[in-house]
Length: 446
Image 1: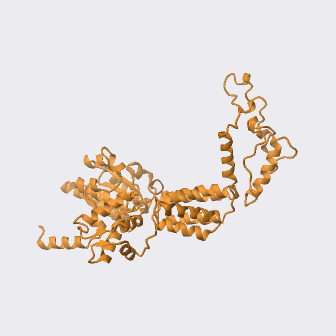
Image 2: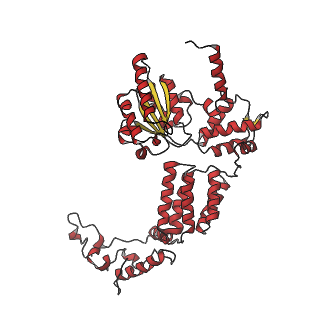
Image 3: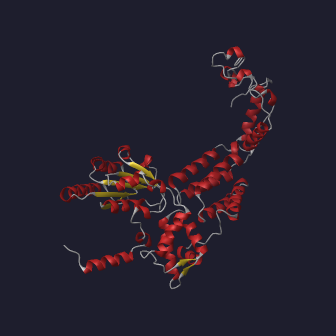
């Protein structure tokens, strides 16, 4: 049946109701923001598209980085029929129906199908198994999008038959480019609005590397601005109910807030630490930067007073990489509270910094002969290893012998505090040092 004027009018009306983020969806690979490592000349994705080859892809990355966009662009450029399934609502029956329809379309009309599954990590093993024949026999070109590590959430047979592409969060400049295009393009706001300087900065911070979020906020702010031609930061605040946090990631606020954050954890004030954490998150600070500071602080100001603090910090940093914001705010908050309430000790950082200072000042000396490598031919004749005492042959696994060079004999770097677990560590260390120096007593139980 041929299209009518009513069909054209209906399609036009539908386009007018589409969100700004949908209207501005890129039509070609060159319009896609960011992801230069995937879209550069000669890259696997570009070659697959330009050669129009059958493909099976997994796109893994944070929200708003362009997974759905890339799928639709691939479909449009390669002239494939685009079918989208949501792993949240589709079942095995839906998957099989789509595959059967794709086979029928190919057999009857020669039409190839691109099957896009959003949030594919939510598919059960049975649902993923249902995809295997279509992927293996290339009845469809398959693209699965996921925000979670596919090595944990996708079955191995499906993953091994697919190309895994990792997408990165967009940079501030990438997001600015997306916003500028939406302001100018007729598909977007068509030049009807401009952004005040502080409004643009605020919008980019709120976006947090998510292009879809940036366009959603821009569209809402344009509605607030109404007949005015300039969108202000206040318009954005009203539109998204988010106060513009005064924060400059390259200026004083960046350094002042992170300094207060660290000192609040060091000072054992979880409430203040959470406040500064919230300020950084709301201002769009890179969560990986926050996580790195938490990991450093766990050893610098807690150390062995609570050995589990570093484990909590590293786990939070891994969660940031694995799931990203906003969910990872919970993991960061847990680590921050843990560290703030942990007993404090700077004994570890003091020990390594003192040792480094000695080395820099030339306090070193040759390695004692009994500790030198004695495995190569002729080493024994040089006296290497002579007199070495194997620790496991002695009570408590500690033998009386000198390990440091002669120039540092008796030098102590690590001085445990009496806080938390370091109290017991200090008692054990005192006994061990006594044995090492040949003094009376033994290390006892550790």
